[in-house]
Structures are given as C-alpha cells and as structure tokens.
Length: 119
Image (cartoon, rainbow, N blue to C red):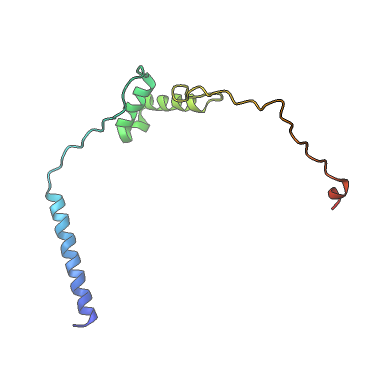
C-alpha cells in the first residue's frame, strides 16, 4: 500500500467520523439552560442600581438597546470613575501609616562635588 492510498483512507475515515458526530449532535433534544445562581450571601441591603445591572446582564444582546440599561451603566461608571469615588463597601478603613521615630539619626546625603557635575 502506498502513501497516497493510506492518506485517502485516512481522509475518508475522518470525514465519516465527522459526519457521524454531527448527526448525533443534531439528533439530541435541546435541554433548557440552567440558570446561574450566585453562592454569595446577600447580607447587604438591596441596591436598586445593582439590581438593574443584574437585569441588564440577563437581557444579553438586548441590553445595549435598552434605555434603562444605558442609564444604569452610565450611573455605574459615574460611581467608580468620578474623582474621589471609592467603593466604601468593599474597602475597609486603612490603618494609619506608622511614623518613623524622631530620635533616630538619619544620615545626610553628601552634596555632589562641583567637579562631578562638569563631567
């Protein structure tokens, strides 16, 4: 058996397997998609903007055409990108930075010599 014949047999077997897999996939009954549930506990009071963002996410491709979603996304951008905006619910209050001890002598840096500047 030469190489051309072996390549033809391999191609025919590959096409047969691909056609069989396609026929099996098309004959299956379509199962309903499982809804995604969050495992996060809902301990914070309900935020209307957050609820609206989840609703817009569930809309899928229709979300960018929905005026309420466009307003919700604009408000969300404003909340996090506005100057001075901080998501306080996620960031704990930072501890004050430790102050260096005043009685520790800090060595002064020597002044550069004039000859080093002209090089």
